[in-house]
Each structure stands twice: as C-alpha cells, then as structure tokens.
Image: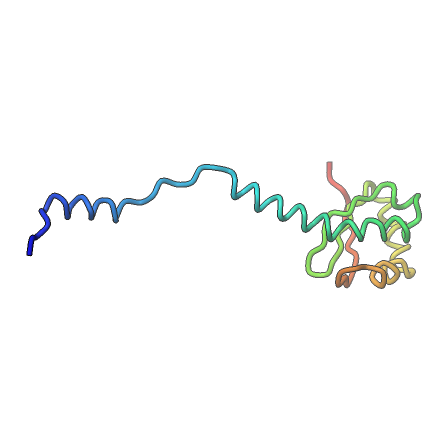
Amino acid sequence: MARPSDARLLEDLRRWRRTPAPDLSLGEAMARQARGFRRAGRELGGLARIWTEVVPPELADGCRLVGVSRGVLTVAVADSGRLFKLDRFLRAGGQMKIIRRAPAALNSVRLRLATG
C-alpha cells in the first residue's frame, strides 16, 4: 500500500486548518435589516391607522410611533405640553380604545419626549 508523501500530508493539513477569509459583503446584513423593516411595517401599519382614528388630530400631529416591543407601543411626542395632554387623553380611556382595537397583543402605550 502506497503511503502519501509528507509534503502532501502537510499541504492537506494547511488547507484544513486554514481559517476562511471573513465575509465582508453586506448582503446578509442588508437582508436581515430589510426583514426587520418589513416586520416593523406590518406591526406599525395597523397601529398607525388605529392611532389616527382614536387620537384627536390636534394631539396626533406632533406624535410619531416608534415601535412595539413586548406589548408596549412607544410613541415619541414633539413637545412636553402635547405630551401632557396626550397622557391625560390616554389615561381617560384612550389607551384602552387603542389596546382593544390593536391587531397585535398590546398591553400599554408608553410616551416619551422626542429628541432632536
């Protein structure tokens, strides 16, 4: 039985132990980001429609739906005066109207002051 040469064994070992070059393409990262955007669009699309139907226009104008995480809808509000009025509206029953009409499992609405 013929025995492979030492040079060939060494070359095979080098090929097997070599670390592959890192993938520097952005394809997978872009695809992952696009999936996240599509998911967020599906979640926020229905909620945005409900938000505009339930919240009075004078309060909804300075608001931006940020996202949904663990059943909490986060809303960025443009100024503190509007945030106070919106908080009063939600506590007076607006939050329950939104939660009842939401297509996803929604537990609460969290308001935060918009930055920038």
